[in-house]
Image (cartoon, rainbow, N blue to C red; front, side, top):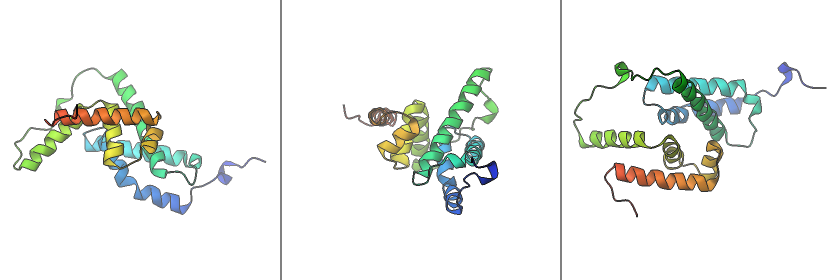
Length: 173
């Protein structure tokens, strides 16, 4: 006899605790999709809502972090498609930051790095952040991006090359 909704597999307290522990990583990953902190927080909230809604689909023994990152990636892509379709085409100038001269060299480099990361294609930026930023394996990144490991390696190589050029370095050509 099939289980009723109340008898459905509920998340263990350990899984709930792991989800809470992963919130900072989710926030960091969300910032790769958007530069506005409130939008990143909204994306984290949407990810957690979707995850809780479908927690019974999580397979114990698999990577909870990869599962949550995949949910976030899919949530962002869905929101992006909606915004692109519904966008009037104008930039919201009220949300742009006011340019100010940084007082220290590291601030300049940080700004240049952010700008260089922002100029990468979404696919390249995503792979670079997953592998180089979060230290994920090629397989984990491939699972999250829903593509082959070779595609991940190729995107990562191109992302590193583009970033090197953007940061006025010498690519390995």
